Length: 244
Length: 240
Image (cartoon, rainbow over the protein chains, first blue to last red):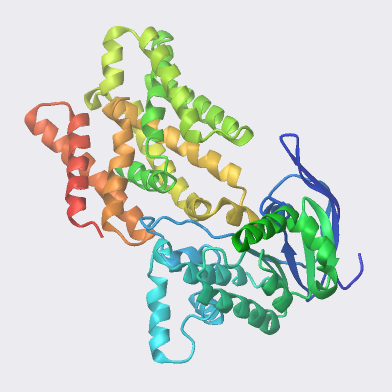
């Protein structure tokens, strides 16, 4: 493994109950990269994430560079409204030092410049996790992830469960964090637009590796067809009927 | 006893395992019956049967995709059926309904030591258990060994049930664990206050229950449960 590599995945295979979920996946992630993983539903994106986090059994090799510390932001969580767990208590699972917690919350956009929002920040600490809006919960989860001072952040669909106006905020927050904290980012997305805008590299996944490289060269007609083939055809068919 | 069952109950409510304690209490029955047959102390039999059941539930939960709740259901009905068959009749009544007046010095010591162990064990597991309630994946990504945490937690639940059975009987032990927690959840806005309140309600209903039962000359078990249920009804008024 060379010095500039952060993660090397070789020949990764995952089988559940006799079904192949991932087949022979190999790719490298360089330090300071922003890698997007795209693919249709059921392509194995989340499974791939869980394998590189060591949460699922697999065959093949997943090697992290020594000194890699990972912050993980899981796909939208469903915390019931009546679970009396406050933001403060949740963040304290990772960091007991209040100053560091506040610092992390400011970094993700809670309570920055004016008094009003600082007040909002402290009120946020006493709020139950289950009553936060999708965007707020996502930012709290990001704060949780950056509390351990990681050098790589993994996001599983950072904007699922977030409304459109907050979506943009989440992605610009991710790219801001990347610049300020010198982070490597790996994120799962299904929005091509976001991939073009924020990712330096893309891994297209549909049980197997369909394409890999900078988005503008890696994503072409052939790879899109292999990714979303049926859906694209269905869409065209539907459109055609509509015009007729 | 009240404090430790109340505290443990708070996790059970959050983990959506409210009925697990109730169901587990029935597992104690055949253990007590076997202990009686061999002239051992029933509390020892109960602890052994519950430990066995907890390991079984945990193992199957880890290895198969069946929910703990469903597994507990299977263990529970099987044990209840066996327990009723093999428990001698006079003891059956006591095992089902408990009898605090029959608790000897040994039982008392086991209960006190066990309760202290449960209380501090639960406090130690607290952060990891709660993180697991939010997301097991998130917890595991931070290196928390969730399967070990879950096993330790289930063993504590087994122990609290074993201790409770002698006190209020298999039929009502579940209430001892769950009712204070459900009542506390209605009144609190953070986990810390939830745990404190749940323990306090547990202690208060046990103490009041025993006193009231003594003055009325009735069995304390049901009175303790009824008092905690009235705390639950009161808590509905404060529901946030």
